[in-house]
Length: 472
Image (cartoon, rainbow, N blue to C red; front, side, top):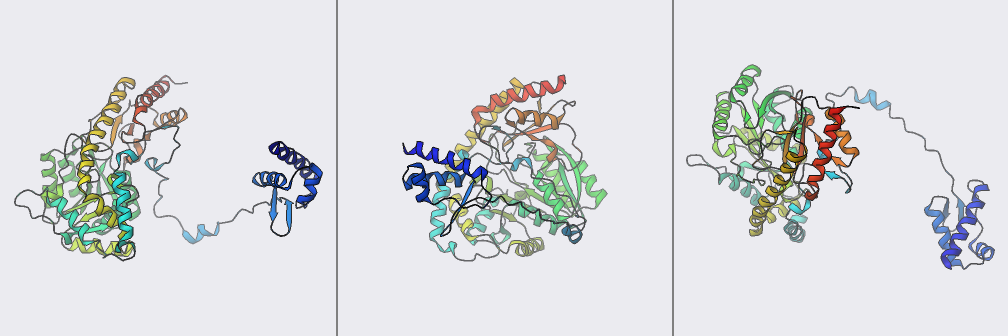
């Protein structure tokens, strides 16, 4: 009965408000209760409904009034155009891998693993312990917690062959995520206005970091087995570059893993030209049928600057990575990081260290290998069944993605739009090329949510591709 009475009051007041002037005061609760034969609680319930609908507004101690709709004056920010001047670089919009989408779509675009692939229990426990310790209130050293420096150095040192001096803990610097490390490395090792060699295609975040650092991007073609060492040597010779950014293990986006002879040839080229190799070991924890072998483990002459992030494998909330460099380069990098961020949150460092030093961490990584293999194979099989016109240069031995070549006549922007219209989100490969794309590609993430929808997603992709080939 109360609900009916409340609805009757709402309807009656709406009729009254329709003819009242904006700002008019409503009758008191007592008056309304008497008019509609209802109790004060029912009247108040009706008023709350109208308030939630934005029809009325209450002023404590004064009364309730018909809401005045105020026109919002648009702000004029035109003065900033002259103050800022022309931008040195035009940064791209939010990259596709960072898009947040609703749960009702099939999402194959992300650059991060799904929550179920993360060591959630270890992370939650680690944060609880860290919050109770000194890390919650203390300022850590600029180069990072000594224990975490030691862990990064020990991890890389374990891969060093006989005759190579492993890195010391003091060679490691803890940084707030690998993106920060890339920006620092590009600024300090290449320098604004100077050439920086990048594989093409390569990680979109590296392209962005290089653009922000103001370096001159020099693309070097790279495929399923990495770059052609002769092409790389010619690029060094032609440009005089002193730094090159690479991903030798499970490259993003191609999934490439360099053969030993390519790795050795690239190292020889870098040494011969007295240059730096910035190695991004982003997928170190995502091996499937092979284990990563860092190039930095084969170099103790200071030519390879090594980055390893824990953000993707531990938690996206743990923006912690390590950078290992030797000699004066290490001091320049540390100086740049101090100017940029001063230090990394001790709480995050303590939590990250707790996770990776637990025995359960290794157990998690072994299980993760099997989970990634199952997801990769499921998506690969669905792609072959439903999109026969697509081509894979390589089935990756690790990482999170498939790099899919489409027919040359594909309208890639149109295909991406058509897929989204039917509930499939994919990432166009154009974002991974520092120069003009060499063909139409998609990067499909098999570590995203709901792998059971992979076959349906590939069916939708195949149908959209076929519609595009037939035309309107």
